[in-house]
Every structure is written in C-alpha cells, then in structure tokens.
Image 1 (cartoon, rainbow, N blue to C red):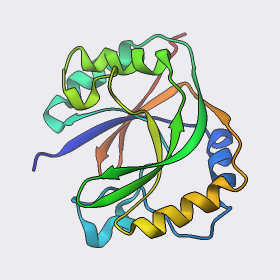
Image 2: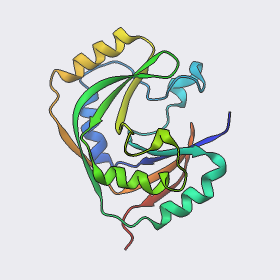
Image 3: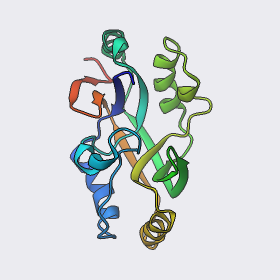
Length: 181
C-alpha cells in the first residue's frame, strides 16, 4: 500500500469546542480512523483532529500538493452542520458523521486539488463533505450513539481559515492559511 497524505481543514479550538460539547452528550469512546490501516491500533493512531477532508493522495504527490496549497488565497470558509448521519464505510464498518449543508466554497476549495489530481473519489460534484465522529463495525453501537447525539442536536456553523497536510495516519506535515496577507 502506498503511503498516503491527506489535506484537511484545521479548525480552531473555539470551533472544536462546539463539537466536543456535542460529543460530551455521550460517554462513548470514539475513533475517527477507518478500518483497514492498522485495526488493532485504530484508537492509538487516531491523531487527526476533527476536520473536513479536502483531498487525499499518494505521498509521492506531497510537494505538488504543498505548492498548490501555498498559493490558495480565499476567504475563510463557513459551513452549516445540519444533521448527524450514518454511512457505510470500508471493511464492513459504519461512519457516524456530521452532515454539511451544500457549500460551493468547500467544493471550490476541493476543486483546486481535484483539477490537478483528478480522482473520482474526490470529485467535488459528488463528494459527501462530512466530519467523522466515529467509525465502528458494530451498527447497533453507531445507531445508539447517533440517537444519543441527536437528542439535543441543533444545527450550527463551523468555520476555518487554515488547512493542514498530514501523513495518514500520522503527524502534520505543514499547515496553510487560506487568506494571504
């Protein structure tokens, strides 16, 4: 398997606190890392913060991704989180996630990378923008967590003005500000 890198939104602490407040509704230990990488150490390797995935590619494209990201000059992006949903994930697992209302700004950001590395999985016209809360192979556990979180859920907004490139899984490689001064 090729080493992967992933470009994500880097959300500030104020925004993360909104998600933590929601997640505190449940005492369930959660993991955002998908199955299929190192299943026995998923919880340990889950180092990415809450985020929106913008793009992922092979490690060999790292320098080009960095050059593209350094040139971005757009305003802060704000998205509306309007629901908590479940989708089927790889290796007979399920992903509990925050659903993002349609956002042209988010699509346009993703399109910058998709146009250079066209990969259908990251086609902004078909991509399901979301924020992963938990991935599990036990559907009943996911459903129970979803029901608990939805009890007091009200839609809210999250904004970001920074991106981060990460080894996947692993450490941050570099961060980029959307708006250049």
